[in-house]
Image (tube, rainbow, N blue to C red; front, top):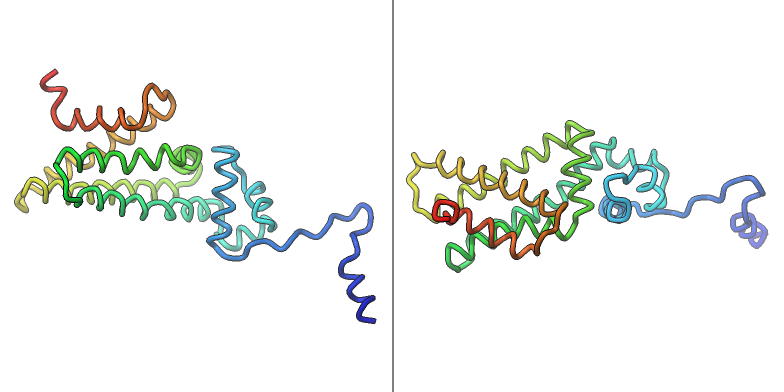
Length: 211
């Protein structure tokens, strides 16, 4: 009797009926791993259907975990935001020259872009275009990035409290510059990441004024 029950559960599906989907990962981390694999493979065209298939689950189950497509995009973004902020803070506080800290801070962003170009384009460009929630999350991240850099600038230069807005202006300008230059560099690839880092650090150091 037990053998018959086992055979019934393992027998192939009748012709015309789809095979049962394999049991997929159930943790949020595993689902995000699957989503990243699809984004790395398919780029900005990655779909929820493809992500669900990669995870071995149905699309409704994927939505159940993340609420909606925006929820998945935000979860992917959050996964990398804290890592980048930690890298930036480490770069700004390491025992080194000011120039070395500047290059390390710039490189922390460019390494993210270079290391995950498909994911970067998916989140920053497609995600922002399709989902207001993602756009708000990316804007909040850019603000946090700028504020973290402003804290480093103020400490580096010993600026008094009433000069905090000046540090913020410089910091947010640098964040916008590095992001725009990184987007251009990712598309054109005219030279290596180290060269771009050096060129941008030169500009911050005042190379334009002395050219």
